[in-house]
Length: 272
Image 1 (cartoon, helix red, strand yellow):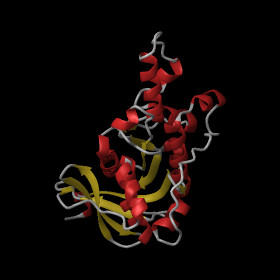
Image 2 (tube, one colour; image 1 turned 45 degrees about the horizontal axis):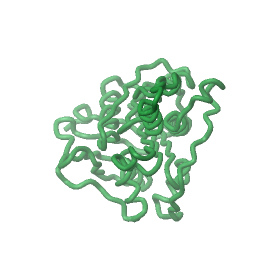
Image 3 (spheres, one colour; image 1 turned 30 degrees about the horizontal axis):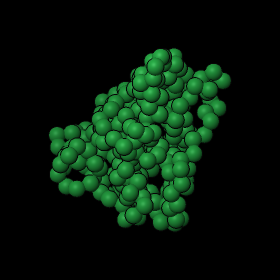
Image 4 (cartoon, helix red, strand yellow; image 1 turned 90 degrees about the vertical axis):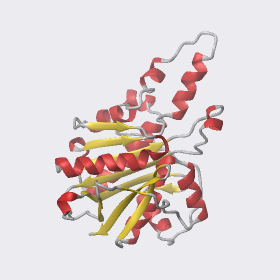
């Protein structure tokens, strides 16, 4: 099979923000077992890049995607305003959903305009455009627990067909009770990958898969660190962790990622 028959992209930058891991450099040390993993609540930075009015309205989803997206773009040496984007989340903004449900269950049933504005699944994409000035195409996906692998597949298709860089942002936020009992996501998790069609000075590895047979019945890769494996299992966006660990190691590998029941996504990785 030739390279033209594959869906393929180079990883030029990574952003990560999640429990106990504040940025890619720290995460890389932990994933390589050079530093211990200490699970702590995710700290969401204030998005200074937003204008004051939008900054005040920024929810966890906005803070998470801006932090991880900008980290990946900076590491890749790209211009955020020029990048097409793929946003993928299993459920969007959990707390905002909770607040709207609470308002609808109250006596007056009045919903804050800001809450309503932030309730759409593409809110993160809209704030990204406001913050960076990006006017390139943006896809916004949701595939429940398969959202990271679905977003990665979409991003690989775009890079391969359009021969342009794409920024993938996968993220999940937690739900307060009583929704938390039905969807027990414990904390916020965001990951961003800056993907390019050709290798360059910032390239870490090339990812590829066979579009005629992208899925496998083999079990998804797991992490040997019990705490990190628990994180991978508990948050849909954290299904990215085996791929991130493989990127750290700098070795050729096939990474099997959780997708749909009995159908995993097999991604080939070759270091550059």
